Structures are given as structure tokens and as C-alpha cells.
Image (cartoon, rainbow, N blue to C red; front, side, top):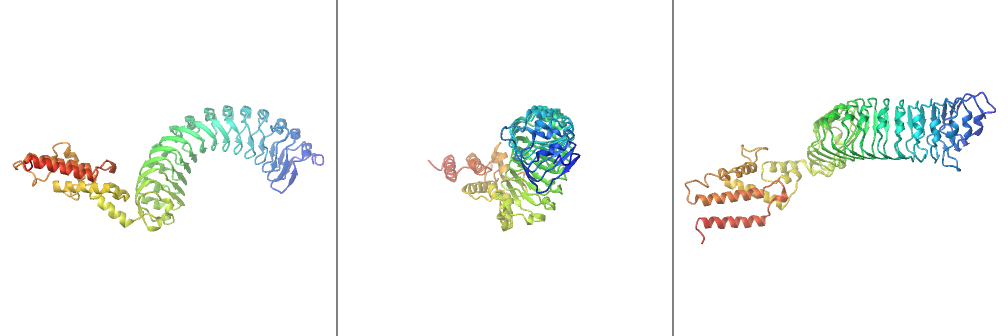
Length: 509
């Protein structure tokens, strides 16, 4: 080829259906500055004579079926390319090289700006000398079989804007040297075996737009400095071992569009300030240890398309404000401790039972396979007025322990002549809490005056009897079911109280 057209400067053959071996004769076209042969079906290995093209600036041969040489694991064509001192663009992605990057990569053109070699079965370690390619703006080595550590020398690539190393077998910690890359916009380290903490100095890279650290073995907390990356668009920290609370400073990420913290060990509450990012389209906090309620402010995320809060310890209702999310296509709050009526407006009319399963306190229409709203409203009313055990009103749980609770409330009602529905009682001061506070002093002060008077015959015996009865009532009505006494023990204690009372009034011998 090169012998026939020796003056050829640019060769465009990309995106065709060409096949066969990579042409060796192309090296004879010594004036070539650009070779574009990507997206074809060329086979064989890249000839070592490409270095004869001393004026070559662009070499794009990705998305073919090119292989490495059988005789050596090293990709030797890189040795030849070191002679191309004007090389600016090198794209060899999506081939079948099945080899390792040689140390000679350090001698590639210092003018090289883009090096793309993703998805082409490159093995071994990233050469330390890669830090000598001082003009690199894009380094794309993802989806290979690279192993070892991320070279700290990458921190010398002061012009680097995009670093893609995801989907490899890299290990060790994320080197602090990456924080020297002041022009970094995209950092993709997902799906490796990286460990240790997230370097706090990453928060100093104010040009960062996309940070993907998911699917590694990272530990400790999110460094507070990350919340100062106010122009960050994508933040994926999922599938690690990160812990701690999610701080309110997360609200500083006003431009964020994707945020994935799922499959970690985060605890505490969901900060309401998370809704400051009104550009957010994807929010997943699933599979953590988050507690508290779902913030009403999430209804302000007007661009939200996906919201996953599943597998946490969230409680309280699903906010009706979420009905306003007109673009919401996916919602999952399953496997929590949520309560109350499921919203029915907006896109909630389209969600299935899978979005709400394993939340025993939720209620709604039968198609969602939860308790009917009318039933749950009735049980909550009964529990609110104080006769039913809290777990019945909260979760619909019926048990003998609930009967013990109800019996304790009836004992209090009998001896105080008060009802749980009396105006003096509320959500804050219930009849039980009123009796409990009295038990810290002379509990007889809450006993009905018609039952005991200081002038009564056998006053002390009556006082002791009433005191014992009210203490029994408190033991029956603890909020935690497992701490309540059994009805068998109730009968035994009542008989003992009766015997002592009769003895003190001399009505038994």
C-alpha cells in the first residue's frame, strides 16, 4: 500500500466491513500523519514497523480483532511506536491483545495527549514510567485484566483530565499522589480491589465532575472535604465498607445528578439537605443501616427518576410530598419499618408491591399486598387511646403479650378511676407514664380517693395493696413485649397480694 501511494498523509478506513491481516506495507507510506482503521474486522498483530512513520500523529485502530504476538507476552509494537515523536492520539481499544504493557511505554511521545486501551485484555501491571507522558489529558485503561497497584507516578501527569481504570484487578490504596492532578474532571476506579480510606485530599480537586469509587473494599467514613466539590455531577461510592453518618453538608452538592451510596454501612438519619441538589436524577441509599424518617424535603427533587431506600431501618410514613415527583420511574422502600398510608398520587399509582414489601406498618390498596387502610387506621386508633399494645397499632402484631399489656392498662383504670382517653393524657403524657412517674414517689397519690382515705379502717393495708396492684400494672404494660410478665405470673402475684391484704386486715389466720 505504502509503495503505491508514498505521499499519502491521512488514511480513513474506519467504520467499514474490512477484514484480513493488518497491512504491513502501510509502514512504507512514510508521510502518513493519521491512520483511522477502527471499527472493522482486521486480525493478526500490529507490525513492529509502524515506527517508520515518523510523522504519525493519530493512530486509531480500536474495535477490531487484533492480537498480540504469540512469541512474547509483551505488546512489542509499543517499542516501535516510541519512534513516532509527534504521536498525539493512540487508540487501540476493543481488541484481543492478551498481553502486557512493556516498560518502553515510558518512551512514547511526550506530545501524546490521549491513550485509549480499554477492553482489550491487557494484563500485568501499569508501568511506573507512564508518569513520563507529561502531555496526557486522557488515560483510558478500563475493562482489562490489570493488577498490582496504581502507580504513584500518575500524579506527575499534571495535564490529566480523565483517568479511567475501572473494571480491573487493581489493589492497594488510592494514592494521595492523584490529588496533584489539579485538572482532573473524571476519576473512575470502580470494580477493583482497592482498600483503605478515601483520600481526603480528593476534595481539593475543584475541577472534579465525576467520581466513581464503587465496588471496591474502601473503609472508614466519607472525608468531609468531598462536600466542598460543589460542581460535582456524579458520585458513586456504592458497594464498599464505608460507615458513619451522612452529614448535612451533603447539601453543598447543588449540581449533583447521580448519587449512589448503596451497599455500605452508613448509619444515622437521611439529612434533609440532600434535597438541595434539585438536578438529582438518581439517588440510592439502599442496603445500609440508616434510621429515622424519610425527609419530606425529598419531594423537592423535581428531576428525580430513581429513588432506592430499601433494606435500611427507616421508620415513619412515606412522605406524601413524593407524589410531586413527576419523573420518578423507580421507587423502592422495601425491607424497612415504615408505617402509615402509602401515597397513591403521581407515579405511585404505577408502583407494585415490590416497592413496599416487608414494611408491616404500611397500609393501602389491596394490589400492594399490605393491610387495608381502614384496618390499620382502626388498630392505630385503639393503640393510641392506650388499651392496645404499641406493637399492635404499629405493626398489627397480635399475641398474648398484647393481652398482658391491655390487662395492665385496665388495672390502672380500675384503681385510678382514669381512662386513657381522658383529656389530661396525650401522646407525651399517657396514663401509663403518669402512673410510672407517680411510682417514683408515693404511688398511692394517683389512686382513686373513693378507694382509699386516710381515715379509712385498715388504711395502711389498703395503701399497700393498691401500691402492689399498680406496680403489677406497670410490669404488665412495658413497651417492649419481651419484658412483660406472663399471665401465669400475674395470677400468682394477684393471689399473693390478696393473701397479704387479708392477713393485714386480720381476715385470715
